[in-house]
Amino acid sequence: MQKYYAEIFGTFILLFSGAGAIVTNQVSHGTVTHVGIALVFGMVVTSVIYAIGEISGAHINPAVTIAFWVGRRFPGKEVMPYIICQVIGALAACLLLKLIFPGLDNYGMTLPAGSDMQSLILEGVLTWMLMFVVLCVSTGAKETGILAGVAIGSVIALEALFAGPICGASMNPARSFAPALVSGNLQSLWLYLVGPTAGAILAVPSLWLVRNNKNAPVTETPDETLS
Image (cartoon, rainbow, N blue to C red):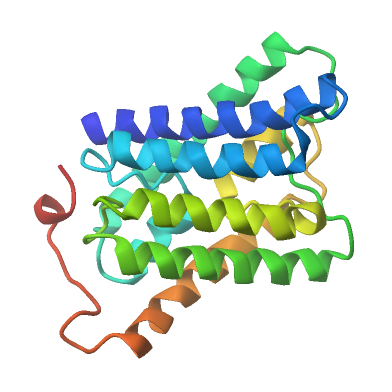
């Protein structure tokens, strides 16, 4: 059960910090700034990876969990429990933000600034980039190691910096689902479920193209993958 609690708490920390930065930016009339929000997301992911990477792998993202499974690094029977835990953590964080800051229209939603197709493609490519790095620096299905947190957090921050104003740079279905549900606006949610999931899955064969057969894919038992 420790790994499930870790995913709940890790995703809660991600959403409470990241969506919280967006909410704080709204109520403070832009004090946090777009750059600040991007840095918050990057730094909190870095911190969570170092905190729970050895326990659950610090997926904190359904797209990451699915991609690890597609890459044969993660047991299929654990995919749905992980996703449920991630959604629970994300929802708890956004509901707490709503309790603290009642009456807002947006509790950290990701919304397209341009066309739906533009945001769909951006989310797919951004998550492909993120997952490619995750696969390269992770061990099995665990985002652990001296460089993993820095590498992954840096990618998230830089992608949020340049793409956030256009698509929101979610790269995480749970990160978009919870704020959309709590805010009562599901209109564009499908973009942030389909795009990141497809992009993460596409990163798996991309890694195989640049790694020799001995290094990819990795097939592990549940005991080898998770603690």
